[in-house]
Length: 307
Image (cartoon, rainbow, N blue to C red):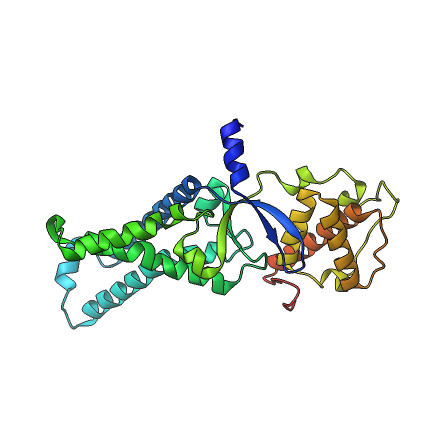
């Protein structure tokens, strides 16, 4: 990495503190990565919309048949009206549901964000909630889709007052991330989110090679940590992600704090000196439990959720 790139990364580094008081270093995604992710997602959405349109036109009997069916009051005309409603609903879902579906998932990232190595996160360090994701994506309509729609419907390159207003509207929101240090969209500002770089290394590569992580005994104490169903049921996906960040960063003070918090929650004596082995074992077994539940259609978002 060049000195310039390293300096840029350092300027974008932020400290996020979770509600439990645990601090993590995150790197705010740069504007280029965010733009690339959006363009990739828009291409995917466009392909889905075109494919859906072609399928519905084929069902309707082809383009030549559309004019013939339009305005008819019989069964064929009603069928065309139904297909038209389906088309509008599909376009709305692709435009809005696409982002909601992927960003509400465990990774907090659309395919475009995953390809560019970024994801969304809550700025207060808490769990990314459905309300946050919905808010930031509803604002996308105001920031992007509405002004573009107005510009597209302008007839013959009309540059009247409405066209100029739409262009200014689009530019204000498009350039909004350039005028704040965290590259926040207006949607991020309202929702309390930001876009950060996703870790480039898998946790297994960052974890120690202790036997505990693989299910054996700790090198430090010889203890083989095994947790029961009730002890693993105390936490969910959000806590798993928090634990993953703690293990990846490897800061002793954070591991001690999380170790003590988990022990209090599950009724164990915290002890001292073997925190990493304990956390690696708990992470491995909690992840296996949550993944097993997801295969059966059962998800546990956090410690407050049932499951």
